[in-house]
Amino acid sequence: MRRGSAARVVHLCFHGIGRPARDLEDGEEPYWITADTYQRVLDEVAGDPRVRLSFDDGNASDLEIGLPALVERGLTATFYVLAARLDRPGSLARGDVRELSRAGMTIGSHGMDHRPWRGLLPAGVRRELVEARAILAEAAGQQVDRAALPLGRYDRRTLGHLRRLGYASVASSDRRWSTDSAWLQPRFSVRSHDTPHSVRREMLTPQPLGQRVRLEAVGLAKRLR
Ligand SMILES: [Zn+2]
Image (cartoon, rainbow, N blue to C red; front, top):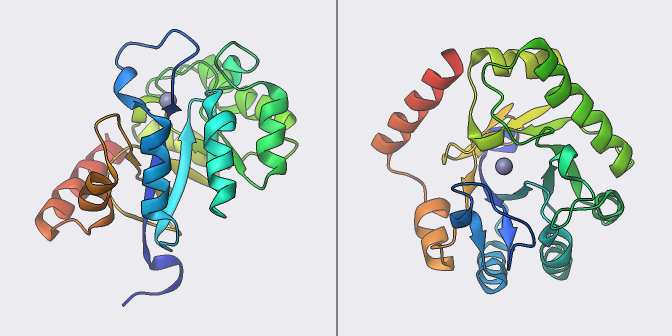
């Protein structure tokens, strides 16, 4: 068995919980889960040392529903927040981000405008990867050195920018297992049709070797394109 940072871990990613308090983007609805599903999934994974948790998009539900259930179970998570949505209805306010940080949670950047980071021009790189991070660090009162790729999209140039700008880790949505030492961290998004059972079967159970090899090849192709 492999030990330490090379041990396999499973990143689970949540988006919205409960009822959205803002207009959703196209295709976003399947990523909203009920508070009941969220709490049951947490119960399923609490105490499993392989599991890492994160939240994308900076929805108000991160603080209202996400945080209390984590604290109750002694869990922590990384919250990847969208800088341009701060203080908007349905999204986290700056003070909420500070509260998550004070509760021992890690704040990461999901960029500014929730647009893909593939093909960014220099002004876009500055806005999405530099300015958004600075705004979030200011709100959180902590350094921000983790990023989650908006809509899971990336290519070699995207990752090059993130490396050059000193991000310590980058979260994707590639639905594979990872290791703690991996710089690019695949994650499984929990979606509206998921149950504790499907999470166990599809995410916490090691993928068969053939499937793993296939998914790793897809990831490699994305990194190199
Ligand atoms: Zn997102």
